Length: 115
Picture 1: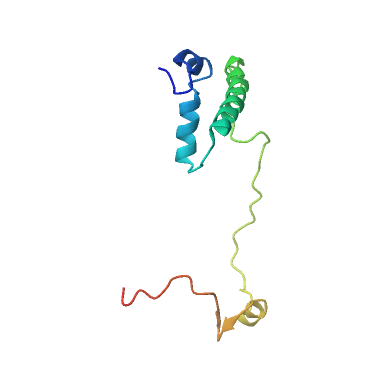
Picture 2 (picture 1 turned 180 degrees about the horizontal axis):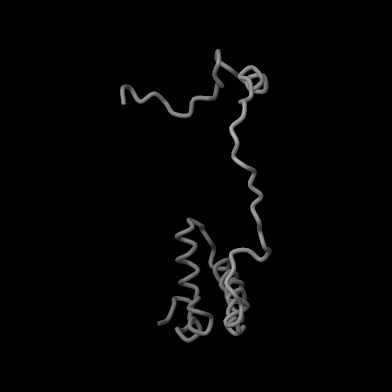
């Protein structure tokens, strides 16, 4: 496979399949308008990044236990005990706007005319 820039498929294979056409495609998906010089610059930068990332494949992780977070996390949960609610007057005192006994918020949906 040859891209319009003279890069061969071998170039793309060595860099994890990244060639100028791939950069143009991703830019199009991201709705980015790039000049040819930007495409070439980003292609080089992305190849470098992917090269560094590919080195992770060389690391032996056979003895590493999978984890969701690098530090142990413990949720501190309080006992779920019913208690008195905050008085409505105290709650409404902190509200930026009220309408009677309710919080007033800006309208986010336009009237749809009967829908």
